[in-house]
Length: 501
Image 1 (cartoon, rainbow, N blue to C red):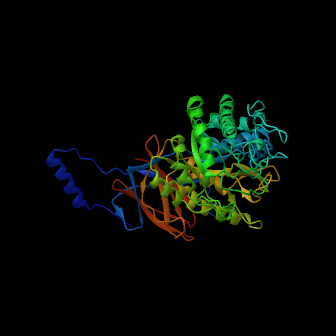
Image 2 (image 1 turned 60 degrees about the vertical axis):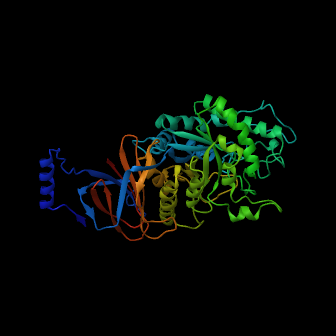
Image 3 (image 1 turned 30 degrees about the horizontal axis):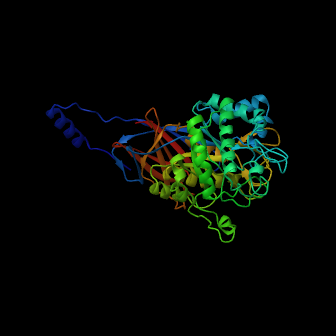
């Protein structure tokens, strides 16, 4: 219940101000716009009637928003146009593809995806018959001069889609991440597993390879804003897809060579370290070679190494641990940024569609949308932006992953829960927005309460994202600057509220 100023008190305030000769500022009532997504799909980023602010406070659980207390500046929200995603999008008719791209990237008619994390070469999500990099050689041969380097593979589908995305959203940022160096640089001469050879010439060649990618993409019209040197460097035994066991010492060596090269030839491109889970996965600890350190403090060691001078910050994934790891690293290295760069929706092989949508929406809302951003993440990035109804195509790796959109067997395109979890951020929080203080009662571990995160956009708009963790409706209040509104959200719902401060 809202508590309002009484007429007598209000009149007394007016008389006091008038007596002092001060200008009288009348209480100003504004409204907040409201968009809601519900777990039963009855509302999907649906704009409801606006809600009015009123002077006073409330007896409901209250979210207090304080724009004066600021945290990290946001770089964007999105996913990845993997080779698989590109294949799916190119299986659409031209009109369908145009419509789908607009739904994904247009900030007005779509959700305004503003961050893409692009594989450098093949990941597990490729439509090709075999995995690839941009400088593959026959077994036993090398190419230290990178004479055979080429991004031609990406020119047919991936680059046109990236350029279209940038056309639809000029604020789009792009990150590049390799799943493996070329096999000739690795022990075992394979893209799947193994390590980077511990040789100075190989470190130099790999850094040059990554630079060549950045320059080639830039020349093709897709500048690279961020790069990491290895996806999931502690995933020592990937299941049939590219991966590299890259100990911290080796990652640091590559970065110490790559950093000066980027500063000279592509200063806009910032290096992100680690690019793996909040905590080292128990399976990765168990697969550590005998006698070696599992490096469960990998990102701490990396930021304490000489390579740190070239590192903008740390990238995290969602597959082990929880977002509090981000805050702990930020506390230890407050001058380095945090980016959240991968989390794929997934499900049991026999889960019905309604359960998949509900479970994905509530877990991502709690842990990814709100959990990561309240723990200093400057980006929120899912995995594939588009897949088919079988969770593919893929070559190894995940067989039950979901994207933001799905191409159905009849050729139609449907939106998944991740479209809405990303949309509740991307559509309302453009790059350059700043997270601001807000009280939150929910936890990433689930406690059935109201959970939220707030931002101030470059034009001064306040965007508040709220999730009701409980299965039942929950009422709450939002207050800012002495003005308050009350609202009730359905169980499991995710909502975004916007207003001018």
